[in-house]
Image 1 (tube, rainbow, N blue to C red):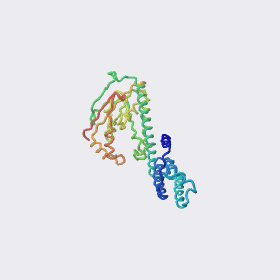
Image 2: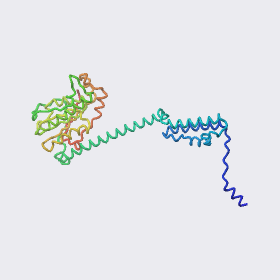
Image 3: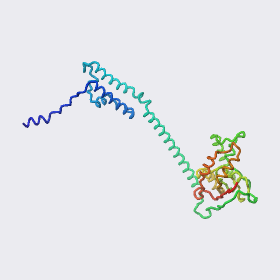
Length: 335
């Protein structure tokens, strides 16, 4: 009795007989192949739709694919071999099948986006390093401590655009303006990026030349959007203090970073002679900015949205952080 029980335990379970017709097996093979082919294209792995996996998925014996004399029914055998050939063609030409699919187009777009993201990240890191380098240069070149009271803000006052009484200015006045180099043959080429870049390079060379003089100097760093009155203010000599030679940097200088580029260059000369930096901030209502812009010659006029955008970009100077000694605030309440 126990021998019979042991024999029963060691016997392998009999596999269930496949009662499907050949047409049903072929239909199942085709269904499974379509499904696995889609998965292979989506994943980029062609073996996901191999003959072995198709046979397993459809529960069809591999002999129907590979044994020529398995069936006497030549029509049914041809159907099996046709599917096998389709699978083989898919494996051999996998790259062609994948080349124009939506999934692969999306994969290509994703790769392009990733490359753009990496480029932006690289540029951002480069900008951070530039800022850090400029700040380190300032710290090394500037020996005077901002924590000492005698080097705190010397002048913060409000001035109007009305001319003050004429007074004697110590020496000549140099006005440095990138805008002056944007004119070519009577045309204003602000939109030409190459011309604009060269204009800024020439303006910075002008500053180096002005700083190379062995003269005590006050540098007025104008801060304000287009049409805020910077150039008009710079032309009025009574706006300048008479105790030092005057250099005026006439540009928008709206952000701390844009001012840092000038101040970093200025600081290279601070240890060898007396230099003071005075920020002149122009607080002009947008209605006046737009009115003045409309009166400009046509080639210099800006779109209203550009004027408003520039007005919003202004970052008020932080004298403690930016190595600026003095500040003048110019308010234009009427045009």
